[in-house]
Length: 349
Ligand SMILES: NC(=O)c1ccc[n+]([C@@H]2O[C@H](COP(=O)([O-])OP(=O)(O)OC[C@H]3O[C@@H](n4cnc5c(N)ncnc54)[C@H](OP(=O)(O)O)[C@@H]3O)[C@@H](O)[C@H]2O)c1
Image 1 (cartoon, rainbow, N blue to C red):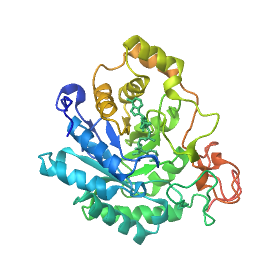
Image 2: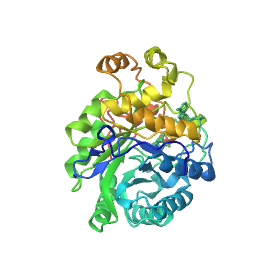
Image 3: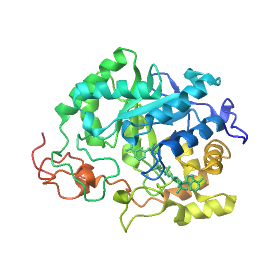
Image 4: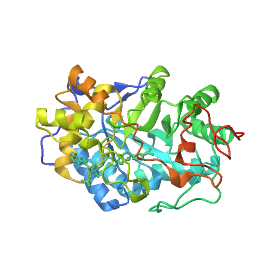
């Protein structure tokens, strides 16, 4: 456990948020994707520090390939006196497990690996069953990839609803979806998504989707909240913006004498979404938690950060494209419709 001062997670300023279900959820979480750079051991070590510092929300995923090591740390933390009810542990179904039976098996494996009786939330990691191998390169493509198929997605969702009924999962979540897809999911789901995990950082604020989530009592969880500076090469293009170098972010950081990364986290918490930063480094892990929960940005600083918006999506998802698709934009319903095999305007499945 960390030797640094833990955050007082019981004070009013750090009080948890409430989900539509009434359950509480911490305002900031810890990511566990090592960006193909930090192995299981390093992520487990980082998580141990994070729990010692006061993080209680942990974002896991089967595809991160480290849930067994993460689970060992969680078990240790529970044995050391952290209450299970104070933890909020989330996992995700990977794209190769969208068939209902495979999805159920995936959640069961996550529960076993994480050494838990229940998960606080399970997300569908991507709305497509289009798979790539871990550590895939930029040009990797699944030959069986296809556009969004709502009927197939709802079969998967129904299987996840049965896990909620069985008490194995407390909340369901979507990830990497759009308003167009969420509208269809909300129309057909018996158990509505309680959370939506989406890319959110100052240069990619996703205002419309963010507001849509709030309007439908779906809690936004912001991934890559620092602009994912160590992300894999497959998620990097020459035009990408670095959040930490943006003038409004830098100006606030300089005025406050803090690192620009910490401004990104303060922005997230003040806006009302839950950032889930990752770091393998103790000082960063602790500083990130303190920054998220202490000395909030002023309304003027929040206003300044509106001008950081660059519509800069970093995790474009091009490895999930189907053969006939045009560009990665086909994954994101940019004209408000869901494209079919041949892009926008072609029949959907
Ligand atoms: N649902 C999804 O599809 C999805 C997609 C992506 C991520 N996620 C989740 O979101 C989590 C976070 O996203 P992410 O890891 O992509 O990006 P991130 O949290 O924005 O960036 C993490 C990196 O930022 C650097 N960093 C952390 N704290 C810092 C600080 N205080 N000062 C300077 N640099 C700092 C570290 O780089 P160095 O290690 O190089 O120092 C760290 O590896 C993941 O772990 C995962 O749980 C979900």
